[in-house]
Length: 130
Figure 1 (tube, rainbow, N blue to C red):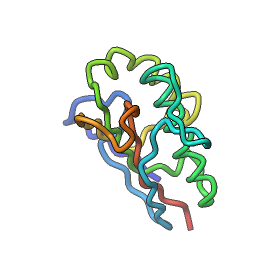
Figure 2: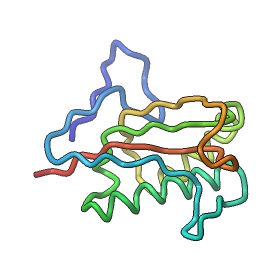
Figure 3: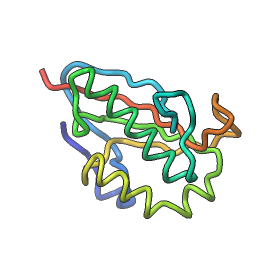
């Protein structure tokens, strides 16, 4: 997997501008901060991001992948100001669970998610090497 960050674009922070990959694609459904019992974790956007990302990584692992196989990730956020205010903590969660490499990413503000208590949802695409 090759991460592409042209010098003619602003320096990315917390994402890559493009990712080139060859292999088997794994489409990862949107995951919220929902636990296995169906409840949304308490503790705000950081706790929910950690649970949601952990859920996505669990699905990826079951499909035979690992965090380094993430090619793109969309993050849907109910309160973008709150998310941005906690960006450093969210980044620490990312580095602990995924590492220091970033897929192509988008942060998208939405009025609400399927689960009314959910503050954040992550959806991704991974490419497993052949």
